[in-house]
Length: 73
Image (cartoon, rainbow, N blue to C red; front, side):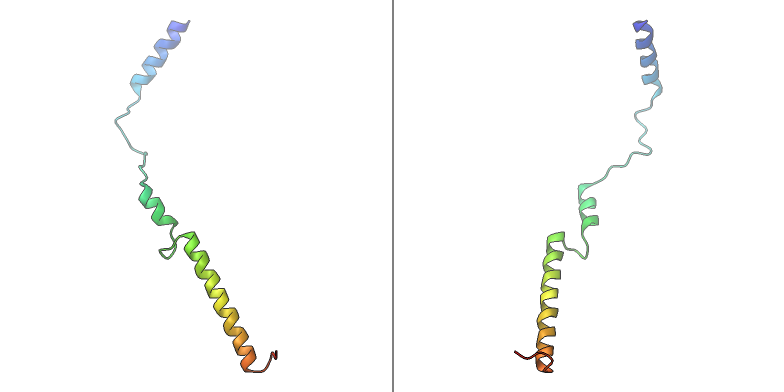
């Protein structure tokens, strides 16, 4: 019984063509890294840019409100 099972698996292995690589894709690590970048920046760099942009808008908005006397200290 085990001999028949072993022979069947050997016959199945011979029918598989391992030299044919159709359907298999090799993914390069550099390509994945480029796809993860947005505007050429990493996630941490984008976070700092967004924080700095928010602070600029907040400070300029406060300065505008002070200049137009909408807020008085």
